[in-house]
Amino acid sequence: MLRSRFVIPGRRTAHVAFTDRHGGYSTGDFSSFNLARHVGDDDELVAANRAALAQVLGLSGERLAFVSQVHGTEVRTISDERELRAEPVEADAQLTTLTGIGLAIMVADCTPVMLADAEAGIIAAVHAGRPGMAAGIVPATVDRMRSLGAGDIHAVIGPSVCPRCYEVPAELRDEVAAVEPVAASVSVTGTPALDVAGAVAEQLRRADVTIDHFSRTCTKESEDLFSYRGAQRTGRFAGIIWLQEENTTTHP
Image (cartoon, rainbow, N blue to C red):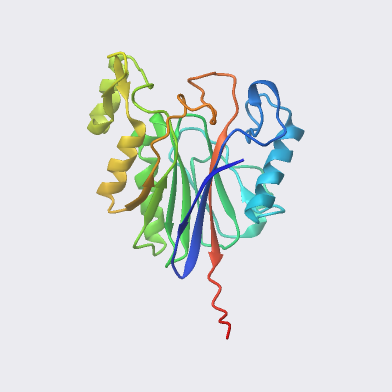
């Protein structure tokens, strides 16, 4: 269920987790910990997977926030817990200053980026696929965080498809490279390819964001993760970030 966890300390602690495809209720192509409702899985099984995740993370109830991801640049800001009960909005990033709310981003080859200024108490989760990365979803989210007072922002970049496996037409590589030159790459067979995660890391560097962790795992090469390039009918795993208050209680 949980692949990895990270902590970004500060006045409030930011916790980051990434799921895998094991330990859930889904079957067949979605076996077994699929978190996406839009891929053709049984909705009740997806709901059970999401509830199990929330419980494991200590975010039970309606405290795990998802969005309808559209490869755009919209950043959702959650400023009131009542917003969690609304229908998912179309956005490719989520941001909050509230504690105890998990911001979830679903992926199956795209790059999940978790951002936090734990001292300022501001966190964000970003879905950076090829179109969103090229359109600037990552810098747009960083700018929104800074507008709310974030200064020392740290990033955790989760698993995504690697440039060895992300073959694209030469024209598409040229188009993306015109925006982010570092994205241009070559696949394992010598064909044109893209390095979306590398481009995300470059965008973070330019924005003066500290990268605490940059996953080396390729979703297409890993049997533990969902990959759209590996099997188009597949589920989605997630990156989640949430804030907790520091426990300042001292014991004798």
